[in-house]
Image (cartoon, rainbow, N blue to C red; front, side, top):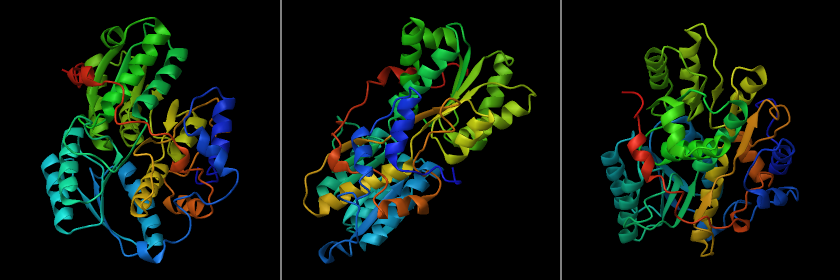
Length: 386
């Protein structure tokens, strides 16, 4: 996709519709055809809004988090803000310390990619008491917890899993044997990826989600969103199943790289379905190395959060809970689908400046603080890898 796949979001939607694939964000796509700057992302900020200090806390080193940060940082600097970044290394205690540090520094706003929903809500409580606006990116804090967000933009994690399930249900019969290499447990991302996947297959195969898990999933374990760990997990899956499975579902493309390395060492090939939709993965789908993915750009997620923060500073009313856009991609639409830049943060920033991303939160509906109930998924975390 570094060869020019980054076009306006309107074409994203048209391509997805033509291939029969689902996507959200349709209302914003129409806006992009006007090539006008989005309401909250346009020119440099007014004098009274310059000089803001933003604390940005990442859950870990995952490239998804980093690319979102790069876009936010570029937009913030254009606005005249200063951004201080820190990382929690997937440690809830470190996350709490990071939030406390940002509160002590009296930043003007906190952006938090939380390690887990419970910790995230408690972090929100700290920020609330300090009178500092807190915005969540990527994951949702516990809606029943003590803290209240000033903004939250999460990925469409359930929807992404569901779209992969739809594609798998069309390609495989109801007796298919599946290995799932899952994301980090506790953030709800992995659990929602799994729930959406099981729901779609249950519908396609005339089963319940539990029956799909019991009868079709032969191995599931977290790869922690990391390449090396996912390679080890996939090697374990191959060993424990004797290679007797039909396909692999992996929860992000960093882990997909490790999965592909493990599979290559066997001399066999298996269909691999992933989630993230990086430019490089679209090319792999064209080549036949990867079967399908769902494009969920961290770049657009970051732009949405930026617009929320700016609106907060300007005293505007805006939707508090939003879901990121997504586009399923397989061999049928890989050549025609146009998706927003994922890896190329600078290119995305340039699209924002020219008003061509199609992202305008003021045209989006508030999605609310809850996802489908994923509590039943907790008992299934790693259940088939013992």
